[in-house]
Length: 281
Image (cartoon, rainbow, N blue to C red):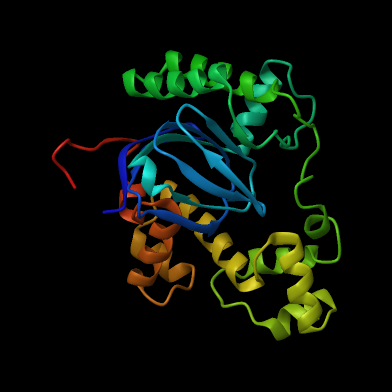
């Protein structure tokens, strides 16, 4: 196995995972609906973030805003990699910011993202993970407050919603995104999307790729997988999610899900606390 989910926890809009990746592992181009903050415990990850190539070594941190386009592979010379990733729902981060007077708007902020060498932020990620391991109660809540504070106070933080994708979210392609979100179960058809955007197919493809970094069909798959995660969190059975979101069959859904998350939908949908036994592959 090239990617192994060693531990996984879920609590009130936050998911925490400890993942081990072999030198042959990789994550294809994908995105998340949540903020993703990771601490690299060992090994070396080569990431591509919104078209920029970055290198993540031991004790470094990566920060991704929602909808950030990312892919990665692992350096074979550095051995297996291990990292902790925390996925923070937008509403949870905004809620913590409001409660503590750090945010005045209800729209999700755009964080300084990329690869960061910040020992204090690294320690906050590890502290949050240890707190959810211990009890997940008041200790975890306190650790999350401190982690969000560290994220919001970092240099480059901006109180601007949707700043990462202005050409798509505020421009002529916004109706296309809304149409795609409203039709997750059906394959996207360029003829239809062209009519929605009032562009010919060539113009649509070029402008969409410029805004999102991938074709409409590939981005539509990302939207389907994000919705799949929402439904699995609510307890919808895997087979029902696959059917409702228009996958060819359950196997197609499982393979697409595993490529992006590094874990099967069934494992993702397991109870909130999961610890992998030491002898399990």
